[in-house]
Length: 170
Ligand SMILES: *[C@@H]1O[C@H](CO)[C@@H](O)[C@H](O)[C@H]1NC(C)=O
Ligand SMILES: *[C@@H]1O[C@H](CO)[C@@H](O)[C@H](O)[C@H]1NC(C)=O
Ligand SMILES: *[C@@H]1O[C@H](CO)[C@@H](O)[C@H](O)[C@H]1NC(C)=O
Ligand SMILES: *[C@@H]1O[C@H](CO)[C@@H](O)[C@H](O)[C@H]1NC(C)=O
Ligand SMILES: *[C@@H]1O[C@H](CO)[C@@H](O)[C@H](O)[C@H]1NC(C)=O
Image (cartoon, rainbow, N blue to C red; front, top):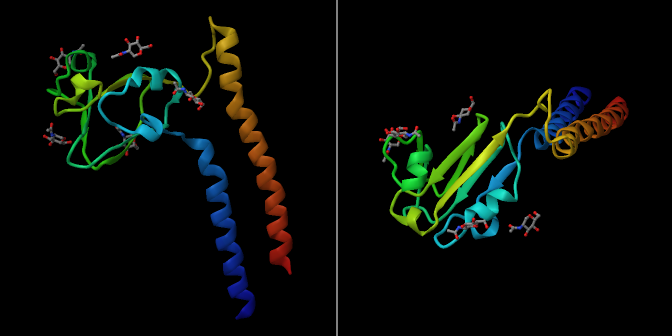
């Protein structure tokens, strides 16, 4: 009885630990406008230029619910602030949107505030480095960083597994 309940505790601890260790590697959440959020009068081009987006990352919009919203549109929609034919629309006030596809994505606010700067476009990069890189000095450090990080996490994970094994043995 005591032995099985302590085994359960060990398993739960282990599961929790693995979940929390592995998940940060898989995706970054890019909060639009950082602590200024999704509001009029910002220049989101400056914000977007300061981030690197990869497939599987999230872009998240935080704003006063019922006041603003988010539409994913094409370039025409972005340039002209029109939502017709939008690929998606969001209005929770805390919208997490997964960037599933490489290439440029366009997001605008749909209630006229797009004209006051509530528009952002981001370029989503593939996770793997392209085989031939014309801009070598730029792409090499960026593509190798996650690999190094992953290796570091694996050794951390393994050493902690050993620790859990020891504790659960007792
Ligand atoms: C935002 O900043 C970019 C980069 O400096 C600039 O090209 C653009 O004109 C600015 N947009 C507005 C609406 O000020
Ligand atoms: C760019 O990102 C850095 C690091 O996150 C931050 O310190 C800086 O304020 C950002 N600059 C702009 C213009 O957002
Ligand atoms: C964007 O979508 C609109 C509405 O569906 C369409 O009329 C327009 O041709 C599209 N523009 C581009 C560049 O795909
Ligand atoms: C928002 O998207 C849903 C489906 O995803 C669609 O039914 C609805 O008409 C859209 N709303 C607007 C205002 O485009
Ligand atoms: C991205 O993919 C996930 C998983 O397939 C899906 O749940 C989500 O709706 C997709 N997001 C967008 C914006 O298409």
